[in-house]
Amino acid sequence: MSTREPFAGVSSFLGDWTLLLPAVTLSLLGIVTMSTFGTGASLAPRQLVWLAVAVALFLALAAFDLRFLRRTPAVMALYILANILLLLVLVMHPVMGARSWFSLGAISFQPADLAKLALLVLLAKYLSRRHVEIGDIRHILVSGAYALVPILLIVVEPDLGNAIIFTVLWLGMMLVSGISKKHLALIGVAGLAAALLLWFGGLKPYQRARIASFVNPAADISGAGYNAYQAKIAVGSGGLFGKGIGYGTQSKLRFLPEYQTDFIFAAFAEEWGFVGILLIFALYGFLFVRLAQIARASATNFDAFFTLGVLILFAAHVVLHSGINLGLLPVTGQTIPFMSSGGSHLVLEFGALGIIASLARHGRGAVRDTNANEYLGG
Image 1 (cartoon, one colour):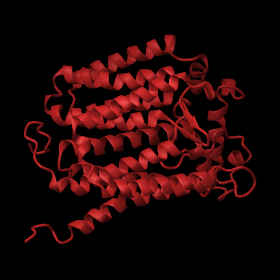
Image 2: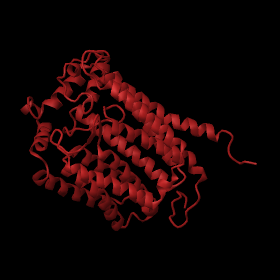
Image 3: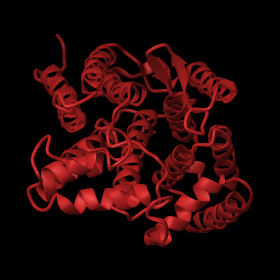
Image 4: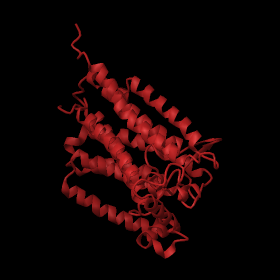
């Protein structure tokens, strides 16, 4: 006779949907915001197709047993593939000054999106075995070296925004693993040194201009400070309830550049107002709380670290994107999860949630790996 709980399957199915529903809702809000409603070319129809593909991927991944991702060969294969793609993209023709995309006809793919997932899986695997030894500086250095490879390749593109995301992802994983205050201080000093080196020898002139315009955006409103200035106008003009769907003048009249991707938060705020901002933050908050709950109930350390890594990745994107749109951070050109236009990042985001749903569903059947010591209670 089976000892399985009578409602285990139902609760696991509902658990999948508690991840899927806020993600789909945020995606639809983004599609409505980027729609021009017949007044010009719009990315909304294409994004709707990508949403269908991403949801199908989520359901497929959630249905399969993906515990093989815990195995070292699968982890290293994904990591090596991602870095090879990052290396290959450097020979592509630059688009808007950066070599960040593979263009295959009407479809474009950003390898940095796959690299985020690859680094996540690798760090989850590494920390699942060694988090109890994180006090040893050697493990911080080794995990940092794994993260440094894609970061350097992305800096060369150049893509400062994604380089920041990768750095925050690694640092966040270190924090949840229980890093000591002494080692955290050393990382801070090393980060400051790296920032100085990047400023004087790594950043392009336009990137330095963007950071300088953040300190004093009014100094060059028609140049480096233009995007940030228009974004603040869009957010401020939304007021409490917004101008209404389709009536955002800053976005629809194209005063706000890249309003369908890098500045979709500002475009949404203009049309939906402060109430709309509270709505999307509530949706992100619900999703993040759900991810934290799943991580807490995970069967193995790998599952917990991977789920927390996805939470950190999404939160870093939300904070960076909204901070840029509100004029609180320098403009680096960064998407916001689920809402921004683009297929590769949307597929990655739903794919990551699908992996979490699969690991949570099949985790109860995991066999204790005493050599790897991967169980949370091990």
